[in-house]
Length: 379
Ligand SMILES: *Cc1c(COP(=O)(O)O)cnc(C)c1O
Image (cartoon, rainbow, N blue to C red; front, top):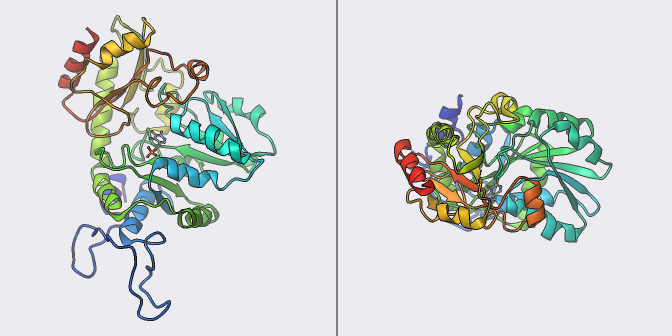
C-alpha cells in the first residue's frame, strides 16, 4: 500500500459488532471476563484499549514499522526511551533540539546518572570522537528545531550500528509523510503526534515506532508499567486527523516554499532557514532523505533583539502567536522566549538560535493571505 492509502486504511477495519466504518471510541477502563482469564484480549485500558490499538497499528504503518506504541504526550514517549537506560549510560544528542527534550535529558535524567552530550551533527563524522563504551543512545532531530539544520540519518545510523548503539530519530518536524527514519537505519522513531500527525491542534499525544522485537517488547512493558497512555478519545481524534495527513503536509509544504522564497529578499531579515534553499548547507541531504522540504521556516533579523522580534510577533493576524506547530492554521513563535526558554542563552546562541529568531509553522490557508499578513507585520 502507498502512503495515502495507509493513512486512511492501515490498521482500520469496520467494527465487527455494528459495521461502523469509523473506529469507535472505546471509552472504558475495564472489560468483562466470562471466567477468570477468559476474555477477548482486553483486560484493562492501561494495558490494552481497542481504539488505541488501531491508532498504534496505523502509525506503525506510516513509518514502515512493525510496532507502534503510543503515549499521553511526545515527552512521555521520550521518557519511555530514557527508561531503557541505566545509571552510567550516556547519550550523544544533537545540540539544537526541542527545548523539552533538552530539559528532560538535563533536568530529569542527569539526576538518575544518565549524561547527555549536545553536539552539532551537521557533519555525521563529528560524532565519532564523542562515542564511548558508555554511549547507549544517539538522539537525532532533523530538521532541527528551530534552526532547521539537516542531519544525515543514514550516515549517523551506520556509525551507531557498527558500535551497537541505538539511534532514535525525533521525526516530529518532518512527519512520516516526508521522512521515514526506520528505512534509513534508525532503531526507534519518535513523534509528538500533537503536531503534524494529529494536525488539528486539539490533542497532545506521543508515539514510538520500531522494527525491533526486543525494543518493542521493552517499550510496551514500560508503557504499561509506567502508565503514560493516551486516552480513547485522543486516540480516536488522532486516527481521524491522520486520514488527511498527506494532503495537509503536502499543501503546507507548498505554501512554505512560496513563503520562504518571498521572505528571502526582505531587507529586515538577516538569515532565513529552510532546507529547500539550494544555499542551505545540507540541502543535498534534505533532498535525499525527505520527500519535500517541510513547512517550518525560521529567520532572524538584522536588529537582533527580543524587542525587534516582538514588534513583528504582535502584528500578525493570521499567523497566531503560539507554541506548537503542524496544525492546519499557521503559527508564529519566538523560540528564545517560548519553546526554547529552558535552554541557557549561551548554549542557545552557540546553536545559532539568536534573540531575534522567529519561527513560522506554515498552515494550509491560502498562501496569498499568509504572505499579505507577513508583509504587513514586517513593515
Ligand atoms: C512538541 C515536540 C515534542 C514534545 O511533544 P509533546 O507532545 O508536546 O509532549 C518533542 N519533539 C519535538 C520536535 C516537538 O516539536
